[in-house]
Image (cartoon, rainbow, N blue to C red; front, side, top):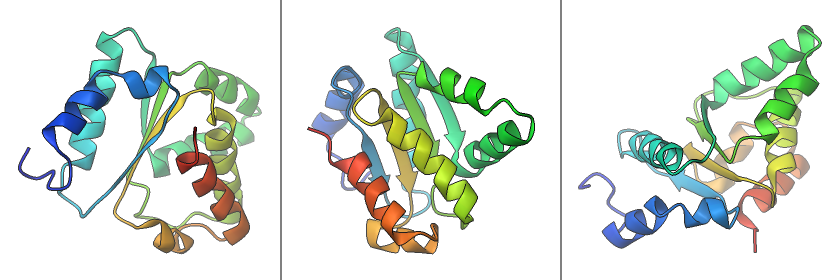
Length: 152
């Protein structure tokens, strides 16, 4: 737990309760490489599985690639339907590669579709203000951030 400098033990215990999934809330973990974000995401995902929730883990690049492949193979709606049944979608490493407009739109669609219906955990090395390095369309990026963090 020493690497998770800005996360208290009580916060981890609260997240482990899976209440954020019950309440359809999202988590965004921002921190330097090696700070434990992926480890915590996986641990929360495994804990959610043990509690009976459906969980899917992707790196952001793998999710964008799978979405693009689904479009090419004319099975995007099937993939979207499958993802819509997931209680917790974990998107790891949203910070290493820039997404083209098409990939950005597909990621936006998946995250937006989940808004207020199911939870997402996103881990990244970049503050929100730096996400413009990843996504071409700043208006869409603003809406994406809004959907991820503005959940009441």
